[in-house]
Amino acid sequence: MGFFKLGTMTLKGAFGKPVTRMYPQVKREPFAYTKGHVVCDIEACISCGICERTCPTHAIKVDKADRTWSIHPFDCIQCSSCVRVCPKQCLTMDNRYTSASTAKQMHLYRKHPLSKAEIEEQAKRDAERAERIAKAKAAAAGKKATGA
Ligand code: SF4
Ligand code: SF4
Image (cartoon, rainbow, N blue to C red; front, side, top):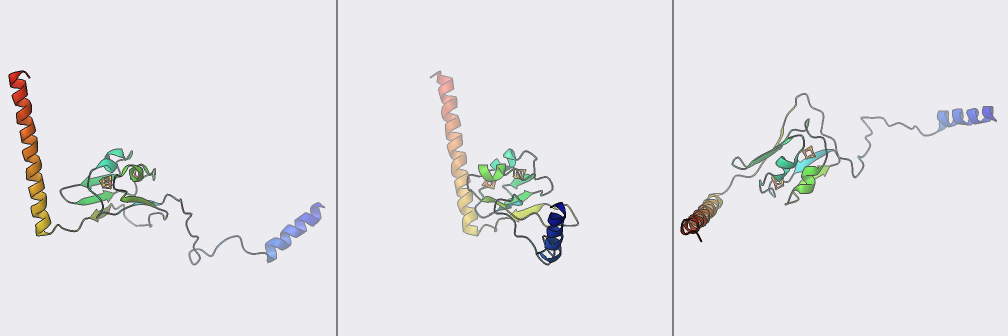
């Protein structure tokens, strides 16, 4: 019986389909939920910095003034915390691993530069916000002074 089983296994191994692939010519498709690397849809990002503050390994850097979002792939442990907390859902976990490289480089995403009209609109919004804050502070100081 043992001899028969061994013979069957040998014949299967000799004439059956190979159990390995001819990598790298034949690549296996990654599984749908493989945690490969984090991708950012930078145009949807509002630079709130929640992902940066949530990341346990400090792999993310958000620069609002420079309009950039960057990640250090070698520091990322693919925990997906940033993907879960992003309020704009602009982070996704791609199921392909980071490509091999010869240097440890940040992955930098930069937003399109603002048009003149957008810059003016942003400056107007900032000025309005500053005015609201100043008014609120003045009102609070007035209440404190009168003891109300
Ligand atoms: S997946 Fe986790 S470790 Fe990687 S950048 Fe996001 S929060 Fe940080
Ligand atoms: S949490 Fe999302 S919207 Fe906020 S900075 Fe990170 S990627 Fe941008």
